[in-house]
Length: 316
Image 1: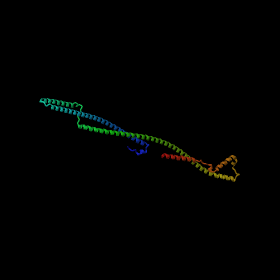
Image 2: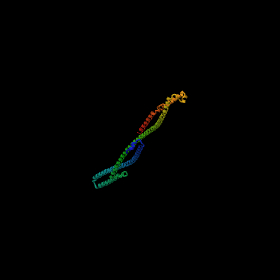
Image 3: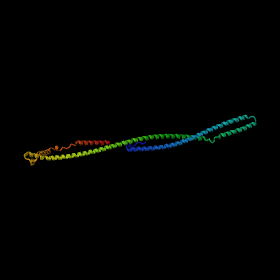
Image 4: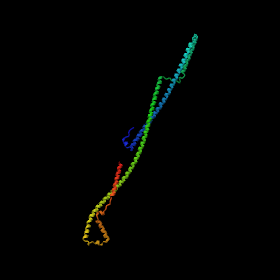
């Protein structure tokens, strides 16, 4: 049989291999139908040859029976002839008395010979309707024909046995191909289910990756905003430190000089002003403490690394 292509062997679960097997099954089925037709033809020829052989055997049996009858009749005729010859000889020996007696014996002898001849003719013509005349050459030709027909029948029987064995091997091969086709279909179905599961997993990983990327982008934006605010706060702190220092110096130099607004403020308001001044004069690190996003960023990076590993595993 033809060998399987390498591409079909490498893709044992692909539809190409299934089509290849279906084509092979179709080819083997066609060969099987051809063998069945050939077997039917051989059966017809064998039946015809068997009928012809039976006819020839019957004809040969009839010829043998006719030959046996003819031999038997010839033996009977020879026996009668021998008996008559012995009777004639004895009558000739006994008739030695007179001439008249010899004539009488001769006349009796003549009558007896005619009767014997008539008896032989009657015996020979008794079964002419049932007898078939055949020569030795024709009998030899019939024997040769029977031998050739017997050899032909034996050859046909051998061909029939070979065709039956071939048909059995084709059936076994068809059964094996059917089992292999069923297993390949089951394997393709399992591969399809596995691909669907992998596709669902990829979709979930893609969604998770997008969410992680979105969170990472938001975190980056928040970091940029915090850095911008920190820079702005640092700039404003530098500008506010110098006036507060001048004000303190003035108060230290002239402690008795106070603004009219300071005189009108209540102690509670003075406390609020002092707290506000303390906030303004505090270091920038204490005034603006940014949120710590490092754990969240670390978890996002870990998720992204896991997603990349899953993609690599799926590709492998």
